[in-house]
Amino acid sequence: MTRYLTGAAVLSLCLAVRAVAAGHADDDCHRFKEQELQSHPFLASIIPCTYVKEYRPPTERGKPVQVEFTMFIQDINSINAADMDFRIDLFLHMTWEDPRLNLTKINFVEGRQNEHDYITLPAYAIDYIWTPDPYVTNSKDSAITKLTTTYASLTLYRNHTIRYSARVYSIIGCQMEFREYPMDVQTCHMIFQSFMHSHSEVAFHWRKWSPVMINKELKLLQFSLEQPLKNYVRLSEENEHGDGTRNTQQLVVEFEFSREIGHHIVQTFVPSFLVVTLSWFSFWLGLEAIPGRVTLLVTSLLTLTTLFTGIKEGLPPVAYVKAIDVWMAGCMVFVFAALGEFVVVRVLNVMHVSRQVEPAFPPRTPVQPIQTPPATAAKLDQRSDYLRRVAMTNGNADNEDKAIAAHNNKVNQAMNPLENGSIPCNLNTRSRSAWDAESAGFRRPNGGRFSLAWIDAKTGEKKILWKEIDKASRIVFPLMFLLFMSIYFPILLSRAF
Image 1 (cartoon, one colour):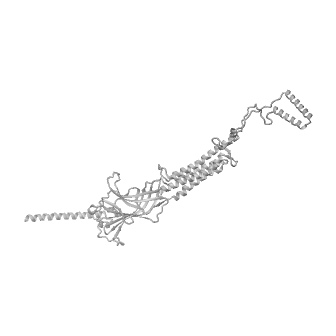
Image 2: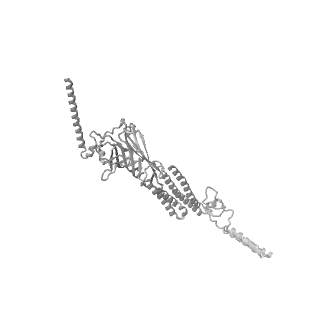
Image 3: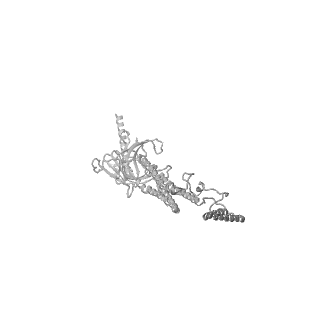
């Protein structure tokens, strides 16, 4: 009996010692919490001394902690094609439950309809409790907005629900595609995921109703934003090392930016079209205004170069061909072709003028008059007297005069064969042929390779080749450019939409 009493006494003593030790431990725990939160006594009353903020809240049967996300997009700006990113300002809300908090001594504010009673705490309270660890995977920079204080708050509900709200800005990287620029559609994503936890530990999900809202007054400068925004949840097997060792749940918001074509119609297409049209005026100037024609074409070419250089400054130097590059190349080709047409016309004009100034027949050596010997001249005079006497005998004066005139003509031809345009048969001369007409610049339209000038068989007008090329260019160039536009824009519109 004495043995049992002794054992009971020892057990009681051990329990008493343990109780005293536990009491001291509790006192030490409370004392530590009070020291840690001495500047925030309210938080000391709701955060137990055994609370460890590095541990996630306990759940039933080891289920993941459910974190609900909502966001309100306030502004989207600085869509930078050169850096392939954009800036977004938004209000981010996260909601989860933490049953470890002691909320029995709190005077809650009565909640609104269908809402639990709540109390709102300042942003510093987030430093003393467990919070999710979301981050934007494709963000270049993110931060909570600050002015006089950090724009964040913590709301506690009577049912141990915690809601964290913050005003956040983030610069989101976007893998843009510029093949259809300036009628491109860019699809960008904003991706949230937990930095440390897998989806079996912490599960992110969107609120069931209106998870992503956007400011109704939001306006973009060069883009239109498709609404409503698409949002969904997806699983990713890649971690920050990319080795696929951790399954992560991601929240995705999809932005679809459609570039407004109106800006580029005014700033790109219309000016370049007018410059190309201006280059066609050179076909009406003719070759009498060579300096003006050259200046017009060269100025048009330089204007297009300057215009397209300014367009490229706002784009990254991609390796593929963009739609705007095709338009630029087309405009440059047409202006350069007009300049090439001028060179061809000028060369043909020089050839035509040089052929006109050349003589139709090669120069001949002057033929010296034939000197008749004196004896031959005396015989001719005697023959003339004889013919006169015969005519007088017959009594016909008219025949006398005709015979004498015919005789004198023969004498003159014998003495000077070039005086009356006649050429002796023994002179080495050639008659005028078709090749002589060719050398003078006149040739039949269908004869030979090409004709610098010809006579129109229907109208009888003289046609010059370089002038006909100018006239044809006035029609051919506009028609070809119209054909280019009729092919370019339908293909661009079909690929863009």
